[in-house]
Length: 199
Ligand code: MG
Image (cartoon, rainbow, N blue to C red; front, side, top):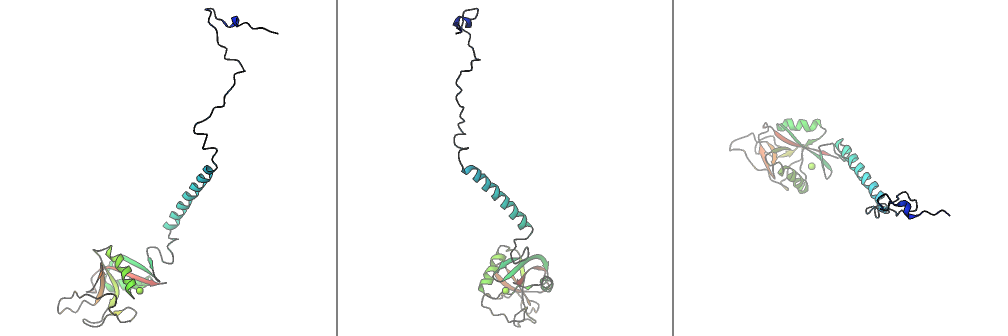
């Protein structure tokens, strides 16, 4: 049996030399403070996967929305309400020019059929208070009855047409909406307009 005297480990000054090459040192497992919880949780990969899926869904929806794929039954820039699509046109035109413009889009100038439709329009136009929008109401002669574009007579159930014509003027034969008020006006004035298209 081989005997190693501890004297062999003494240096020339008599101090004991430490031997780090020994193989019998017990190696304690190193534990990460963070690692104790995260790797053992089964929810982490699921949460990461769900996060990635949400991100992909948001990106895809944004791209399709930008392309107008999700504009519903209405064309892009048109607003769906009830059974119609509405276009608030911000290009200025006379009443006749606006009528022609809506017609070219397969639509007509707005016809307000009931109080609900008026409230919807009013909400939109009230957010553009400085602007007036032509609607599809006109008359052939001053003081004559008002007619919608489809030939039906106007009945003042949802709103009244306020008179802006000075006495004796015969020109205020078209109608626009300004905020929540509806006025008669000279048809040749250029302003914005509202087109309506039934679904
Ligand atoms: Mg209508």
